[in-house]
Length: 225
Image 1 (cartoon, rainbow, N blue to C red):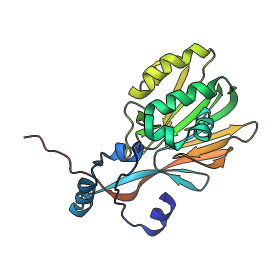
Image 2 (image 1 turned 180 degrees about the vertical axis):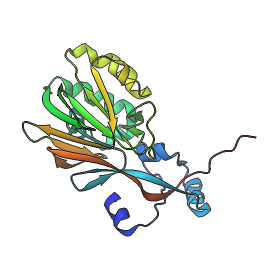
Image 3 (image 1 turned 180 degrees about the horizontal axis):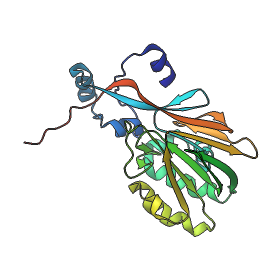
Image 4 (image 1 turned 90 degrees about the vertical axis):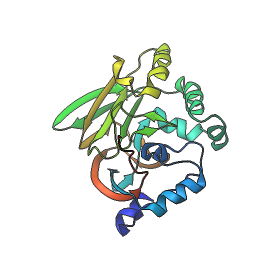
C-alpha cells in the first residue's frame, strides 16, 4: 500500500477493522466505524514520514531475526484473540530455537559490529500489537529508531517483556538503541527482513526515512482552554 500511495500521491483515509493495528494506534485513529468515517469527511490532513528499505516503503517497523520467526509462526486467530499477548507468547515459543547472528550496523558514518537476536528499525511509534519502538518515537520526527536485542541468557527475556510495552527497552544493558536518517545493515548470510508484518527483503540492506512522504487524515488536536 505504501508504495502505491507514494507513486500516486493520494491522501490516505483509514477505517480500522483489525483488533491489533499499530498504524492506527500511532495516528490516534478512532476504532468505531462511524467515527473513522467522520474523521475522513472532516479532512484534517497530516503529512507523515515513511520508512524505506531496498526499494520497499513501510509505515511502522522493519526488522530481522527473532521477529521474522515470530511473524512466520504467529497465527491470525491467536493475534485477534490475544492482541499484544499473542506476540509475547509466540516469542517465548521461538526463542529457544533462535540463535544470535553477527551484523554490522552503519549509522551516520559509524560502523558497529553486534551479536544479536533481533534488529528492529522503526519509522512509526508502535509495532507488535502496541509496543513503542522507542519511548519518544513519532511518525513525523524525520528519523529512524533502531534497537538491537543482544541477549546472552534466556532469563533476560522477562525484563524485556516488561520494558517493551513502555518503549523503555533501551534502559536494559543488553539492548542497544540508535537513531538516524540512514542505516545500513550487513550480515554474513542473507537474513529475511519483515516490513509491517510481511517478509519483503533480505540483507544486506539500506534503510532510510522519507520525510513528509504521504498525507493522511487524522483526528484534530485538542486545544488547551
